[in-house]
Length: 393
Image 1 (cartoon, rainbow, N blue to C red):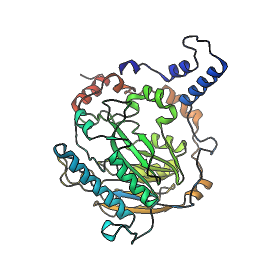
Image 2 (image 1 turned 90 degrees about the horizontal axis):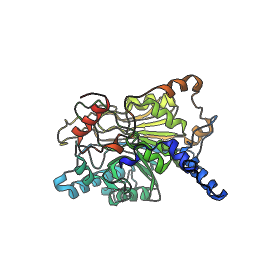
Image 3 (image 1 turned 90 degrees about the vertical axis):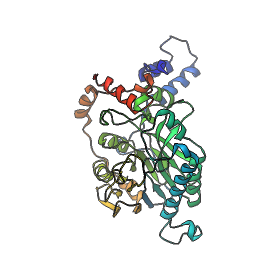
Image 4 (image 1 turned 120 degrees about the vertical axis):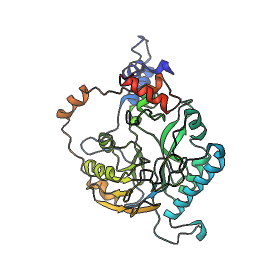
């Protein structure tokens, strides 16, 4: 895949326009390639407060966030441990809908939830697995594991958002840190790759799940520039989901692209503080889904980065609408007046004439496309790659 490493968005544009080789094109061919180039390079962003939406099915929605454990699947008993984790997840979804299986599957408690949010790895859990091991654990999308959750979405007529390790046929040997949203039709509505991993902060190791930044040029070539910061435009609102922590500029960029509900899902740490800050700064509804205490997850303490008040639903003023009362498994729910928000939404005013000269000239230490050149087999090899990129021995 190294032949893609030098592909740039500029070359994609030029190639689509037929300029690179001086090819003579018919008017129809030229028009088609211009359209392809525009799709590859354009970004759907709010302009003077107007952004792309689809009609809402109702004026207000009920949103629940499930604070659940992190329990890694057992590679030696993969099928049974995956099934056990998946059963636990679906039980929690039933509980959030007030329709526990032991109650006969009827709603006997609370209101119907329109959006259920889960954290980064509720089904597979987390361990410092090798690439070979991750490829055994990762889901196909669609696939049988996701289908189980999608059937719950269809049963309840709701959307369910969760994270997972995923495999894509066009990316052999890559394991993608993916956010998935399934809808009332029982189908996948949105697959949102993690934008980037935190680099240089894991001691000798580094994460090996593929993110957009790791393969940026090929990703843009395949899916277009707009897909680098994806928004799911649904009939309950525009939803963005990310497992990137402590990245306020990313959250604001998603808001500027029209996100109305933002779901923060980092496993291994509370997302409550980030959710409050992101909601207030970006003026969107924000769901910060934390994990609960997690017994029996090898190599980690039961706390697993959890803490009290680790899961929240926050309004655009930064006011917490719902909050977990402890660090155990829990469900927090809030009512979101999505239609009123859409009618009255006011974007933050960013003085771009001041900011752009800084952003355009800033040079980050870590450049994109590292996984187009080298695909590390484990955390230690990924750490060595990070140190090399930092100019360290």
